[in-house]
Length: 275
Ligand code: 9D3
Image (cartoon, rainbow, N blue to C red; front, side, top):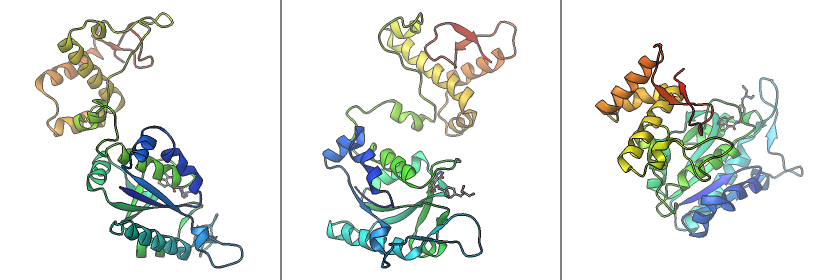
């Protein structure tokens, strides 16, 4: 897999090539990165990449030509490396939200892609219309530019490349079940007066599995009720799950409700009543 990133800040991409799981996968040759600075594709003495918006307004807009020239160079390099010229994806606050399904299909297809990182107020729309296949956002919050979003995309895709993970994490499959992960604990068995949920110390695999499933259900209901609805629609919840969900939902309105783990301290063994 190959990513060619068009960015005014190429240095920051060391974050994904030089650290963690993405670094290891990079060293294993599972993916390559090249960066292209629009500033290197300017013709004027000041190496100008931005200008004031037509129609007025605050801030500056990235000019079309340096971006298009950078994309052409990226495509040439991709072909020279034996790839087909990749899909051009712009990271944009105005894009479609990135999904797990999108990330997985991207990793499965492999090949090359060109990621465009915006800065300032935005990008000349004529470049988007002429050169960009897809605009992607990583969520409803404002970043200062597309770089951190592009690195999020690279990280999310690379970890799905075969061989990238040392252990195929069950947590990684958690989006397949559509539920959030259950909480985790490690040594010591008591930390600052807080113990570990007894089920996890029982050595009883079925009991541990059921505890984790119920924690995942309770946590998902509390933090992301939208995902419970989606898991139900996808047929991922069985009758036992539904019974448990009914119990914690009813418990919320009863005098002596069943207990769930304290959400504000995942390590608590002190049971608290469901909110
Ligand atoms: C405050 C400026 N906004 C005016 C309403 C528009 C705006 C311009 C440029 C908002 C964000 C940005 C820079 N953001 C990105 O390039 C970006 C982004 C994001 O801000 N949030 C989530 N995903 C992404 S992907 C790229």
